[in-house]
Image 1 (tube, rainbow, N blue to C red):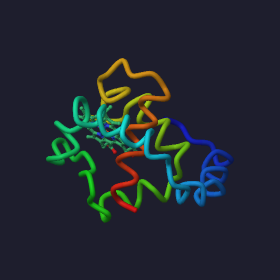
Image 2: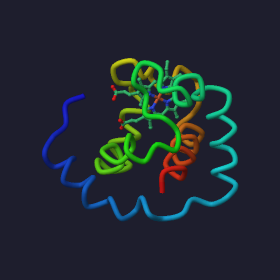
Image 3: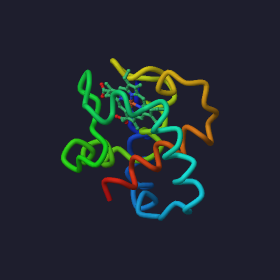
Length: 105
Ligand code: HEC
């Protein structure tokens, strides 16, 4: 993924938005998708996947901001398959990512 400077800057500007708590329903939905589709790699750190709950692994990811994280989650990167290898729609995928992010805050 090519990143333009403006997108990087925008992501940084949006960083405080990460601190916003997601509502419980969204997190619950996200946890469900995580447990069916993402857990295989993200609970073990397979292929260098950032492990759920590992603040050290997630810190540099969170620093890039939610927009960039969603771009990677949607399109994939390295061993991370696009949408985690699922057919999840944008809202469901985002819920799973928000669940993962909530575990390192
Ligand atoms: C086949 C293994 C695998 C599966 C399944 C998988 N991931 Fe990943 N994921 C990875 C790997 C590997 C990385 C690290 C990619 C890198 O930085 O090179 C990653 C990175 C991420 C990141 C960090 C993105 C960033 O900005 O660096 C998020 C968020 C993520 N995955 C979400 C998910 C979600 C949500 C699911 C389930 C819907 C999922 N992943 C399923 C392997 C997987």
